[in-house]
Length: 249
Ligand code: NAP
Image (cartoon, rainbow, N blue to C red; front, side, top):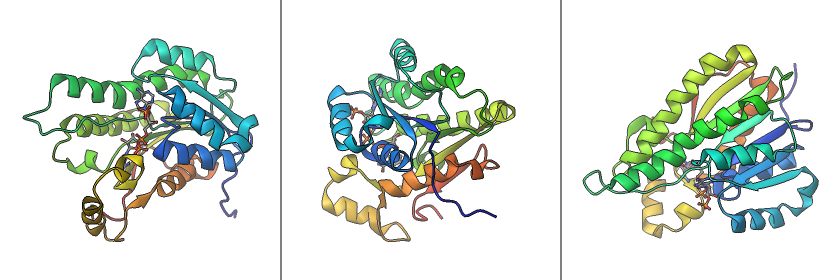
């Protein structure tokens, strides 16, 4: 018998979209638990800010500017990795919300290329960069609760996030024998810079729909990612963990 305490010393983690919001919190918690972390993010400014905030972990931290929707950029980022990978967290994502009637092909393409093709690009490129001898390789894909239930104004986002669940289940089947588990997390309404920008009344209405009567915190998602990344979670595979305060019971 062993109590689980998050200890990721001797593990290395890649977090896409790791300079902001949920990804930043995931990166911070892994660093605090002793992991080496490579933050992949779009903007140099956001990466520099993250590097400053995570200064105390400088020796464990690697950052790289990357556009996950661009294969050449992903190949370059992978080549810059100083460590073999144990855990990949596919977290980078964008929204371009509009009702279906108003959604443009550009809105569709932008979200599909980052939120769906981005996962294909990153995971395919990093597969050969995983620590080959590890029996506990982990891929965790950040989907969304809306992938399970649909959402007004999010045809592109819901399609991409539902596709992420499909990829998760397929990779779980294909990669299980090679020492991987592959799981998805479906966050509900989480407080991030993105949601903070919304009007207070809208946030209150969102919180009122949650049985726990509050929005989720980035730490709620990061803790679920950490659990799925442990060696002790080795029999959890191809599943979707909703972390939404019971929003969709
Ligand atoms: P966020 O604060 O906007 O963080 C997303 C990060 O991904 C940003 O740093 C962003 O960089 C980066 N990114 C965007 N496009 C990229 C690209 N092409 N290549 C590399 N990095 C890119 O969003 P968040 O709220 O933390 O969301 C994180 C994940 O959780 C997303 O996949 C989102 O869909 C999912 N999620 C969030 C919620 C929620 O309530 N917040 C709910 C369900 C699911 P820039 O800022 O420079 O563009």
